[in-house]
Length: 444
Length: 158
Image (cartoon, rainbow over all chains, first blue to last red; front, side):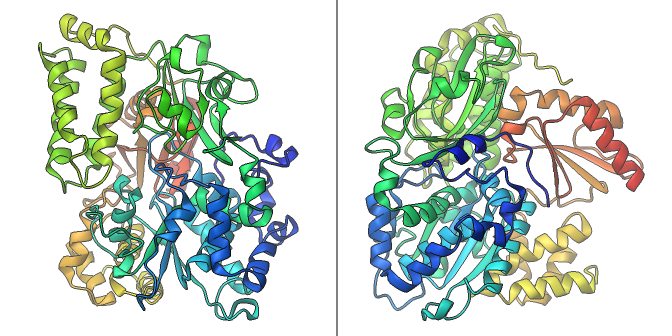
């Protein structure tokens, strides 16, 4: 079985009585059913089926304060509470494993190294919302994750944790592992549902929200992989244990994917409220800037979140603190840029991505991302024109908030913040027809 | 028929799992793509017959998803992530090195039909950059030395 060589802080998690998602991710046997059970797996699933009412599970998750780890940060238990009741239609759960926000590579590690913890969380969530068929939608390129989740699923069926009348409880639960086709937009929940229905991955207009009209027109809950894995531990250890971690409004722990110009990129599980500076510089985590260069900027929550300049990096990694410095926690993907990065070059990489991934449904996003790419490209090529910065700003304003799904906003936010923070550098590029900072990252 | 008995059986096996057969479109084209290496109209027609969904709906879905090439590619499709985290770790240099080693430009296939190199968007290997995906396999934390070894291994396997 393929296994990503990514660095993790599993040793720290194993010694901690608080960190939980990464406790066993460096144990190659953890993917096997027997080892997972030795480590306490499926015990709570059996207890839930025997002793818990579905509403109690939802209540506990609400109490835990768990917020969606895919990027939106919406409280998971509250989302479950929006489910349309008494419709007579089946209810579906979809685990969102489309992980494609640039910078994010965390859900993959959970599926590769602790697939049963994801599956158990899905089962508990399914029980809470009264779902009897649950899906995991995995991005198509993660074929090895799909294989791993299928292996876990087959083991769970064989041991009677899935199927009909599970452990004599009368509760039935089937599971389907589904793979996508490599579209970023399918991480947006309504586009994911269209894709799962065998359609093009265009986002749907909300309302109706998926909790009312989702998969096949039925009430559906979509939660991220890390969110559902956390559910396993919240129900196992209780909401009070979970809220003892993190801050008042950002409870629990979170996996941060650290990438870019750091000495030790990796996936690190830390309590929310952890210092961003520590994550980047501490020898236990990022270990400092590559080549001991000066820091230029950081994207703290995946490529769709606004940049932070070095003076703003002394901030805590929680939903509220990042909002106070004008950015977002997003998916927890921290991308670090050192002084040798041309900001126009970096933004060209990003806008190319958003233009490529725009589904084309909404005009502002479809056309706007294309125009932005053209203008940023010409600036980067030394053909920028006076007024280009203002034109970029105007196009951004005309995309923001005017599209069905957040992809338009996501394309705009890093650009707006990069223009705001490094306006002089953009202007230099236009006036002098060249980079202020020559980007040169040799491949050795 | 282009699809083998084995592929057809796999598609059928997947299709029966879904509450709605239309959901089997993506799994079916994934099976077809893995067997053939790319997708085309003939395959959509075959899939249509197997899962009982109109041809146009298969084509409509398939053409949305860029992961599936719609033209023939080399035996080994090398997809290099050129998104931001990989670019910061020299993805451009990696692409240039592959171009040099294989004597082709990005988007082209080697004369022997073995390798195609393309640039793709984020593949979720940001903390192990730079990286490339060759067919279904991920190769991460790449260096010149590793790339040499990977290409040599694939050549000797081919």
